[in-house]
Image 1: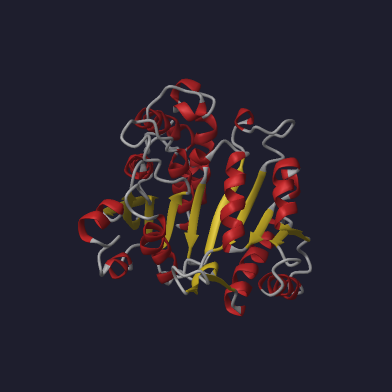
Image 2 (image 1 turned 90 degrees about the vertical axis):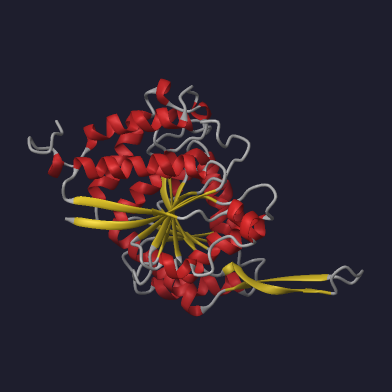
Length: 368
């Protein structure tokens, strides 16, 4: 039996609500598939922890998390705690300490009625964004000079190392080769005359090792335009930390909103645990009301199963999501329904059995 030990960090706002539904999916998989089991350990870290103890996570939190196979995060951020503290002292700390330098965000339309784009459907909106996740504009480098004085100057330094830039670009080329898809690099070399010129040069250098991969390069402003007008241009996309963060929210907008936006923070070498999360915020205005859409959190469970080497279960989750989206009465208000968070989750559990992998669809499994 394959067993995975998962750290739960539900976090703030709607985080605990959506993580609970994702855990239900994992437990349902465990029930349906006798070859798989999970164990869960929950950690109370987040903004309330900060308000109580003056820190976002325990001092030895990273050491504790090292023992797990994966981390499942809900959301970070809440009124009363500055965003740069909640982000840097928990989410980015985990990403950096565990060298989760690959951020994977699917931009995939699961139901034609979810996109605001005219004459665009599931065939046109189906690509993958691979975002550099460890340095770039989020390296935390810079300075604040003459604070509070008329000559005050703030410097925010984007850090693009040869190692960091080459490894994310190589990862994207490998993915494009494996999937037999095109690869598009998104940068801004005409304005950022050091970092993005370097990025483009490395993209071209690494590309010489992958003559079978067809490539494109766009400036980020042009890419933003094409995300909306011609999303079919994209299959695999690779870009920097900041650009990837912004563009994938735009990607969420054309596929149904942040309630359907998932993200995986991957350490490809598996020296450390990877982390899976919905990319929406903590939405404090609806927290505790049963209104949160858990599908982004459930989609991140699909990514987790892919990472665990169980792509059949990852695919089963996406197929179930597609079916569920046709059951309007079972959807949360953001998707036009009237169901609560847990009602959507319960309906998902019923439907998941229909899409279980062939290996568990046998008389002994109880799945028909």
